[in-house]
Image (cartoon, rainbow, N blue to C red; front, side, top):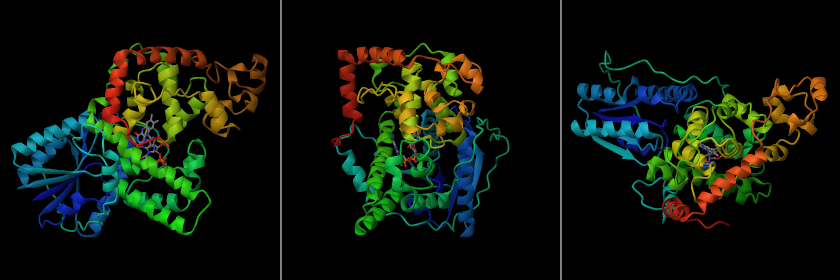
Length: 489
Ligand SMILES: Cc1cc2nc3c(=O)[nH]c(=O)nc-3n(C[C@H](O)[C@H](O)[C@H](O)COP(=O)(O)OP(=O)(O)OC[C@H]3O[C@@H](n4cnc5c(N)ncnc54)[C@H](O)[C@@H]3O)c2cc1C
């Protein structure tokens, strides 16, 4: 018996490991809802619902061709032990998963089990990430090569068998999943993923480049493909291939209506996807340690009051509060608004990215550890290789929501505040607050910090560390290991 173990690759298309498995007469496919992983502080019901939908779609595809997808709940090691004791397993096939510490620990435990039971475990590389790399020289060329490889056709899984295992005592069914009250904005599964890709490439993506930072318009104009990539309903290569085909078509049509500009901006972001995951592959500690250790200890003292205000979208800065509430309800927000939320937490509220990143991982449906932690570090000024960028939430509101539609939608207590006060509601006179029925400090928060003073203070501390010889040397080392070798235009 040979087994394919689905992890974050929930699809039949472009799945070479699954395709290799399907050549065997005796084979099975399994997915495990790992009890330990799903009880971690970076997992929530938002993720579980999407996984369940993806598995329903996948199971149906297995059944349609006469195969079977075995879905278990429990500890991965225990389930594989049961499978190994019930069947004569020769090989386990899977795709690589660059994840958080508990995922690496699970993999180490399984490696040990497979070795002791003489089971060969074959792990395929699923995207543009390269294993065991020491630095980034030549990475871009290798990425291009991988992305030009032909797509593996949908696999025929008709031979996969139903696998009965003894799940009596050892397997725990008690999953403690953090519950997120969200409004459904994605449908998981391979078919939905392809539909979204086609919709983006042929309809909604035309204004991608101009709408990407608008909290209102980006909801439609961004590709919204990130959860499909995170859970592997689509491979990055499938997206790149479809995008290239569409670009060729548009060039032949001599398109001049913004499509090509948008698709070029979109394509570079697809490369960033792997670029960021590569960092975590090379240095897994980036999940919990600063890329430049000279910044260690900088944000050790932590205000619970400010953290709570940020978490609950009650900071007194309308754009921050609206973005936080929108994100927590929908599971997604655009890049700029994510960066602003983290910049506000890290620079203005002086909160440590290790706490804020874990908190938001439960609310980002597309939570991808390699991108997530590296972006949090970047937006907190601790990488040494990126320039310090402090987003001013008042300016972001004035630039990206000038008429206040987004802010009023997500902070309904500000609905009666006229435009001239919406950037600074606390500046309304008490008489005016009473007149419009929005009392600052009661109906809507007072600003929890002064953004100008807190940003100045943050800059002073960060630049004083950044200019030390130790930090400069560490930044140089970080650049050699992780810095993009592509020249800026
Ligand atoms: C603090 C912070 C945390 C983030 N955490 C995640 C995360 O956990 N998972 C995640 O997929 N993205 C993350 N991002 C990157 C980015 O915000 C999202 O990829 C994007 O908003 C997803 O929406 P989309 O699919 O419509 O993106 P599009 O703009 O349509 O981009 C297409 C794809 O390109 C990739 N991409 C886009 N922007 C980036 C970027 N800046 N870095 C790396 N890849 C990118 C994603 O795979 C995305 O799906 C984070 C950004 C910040 C600032």
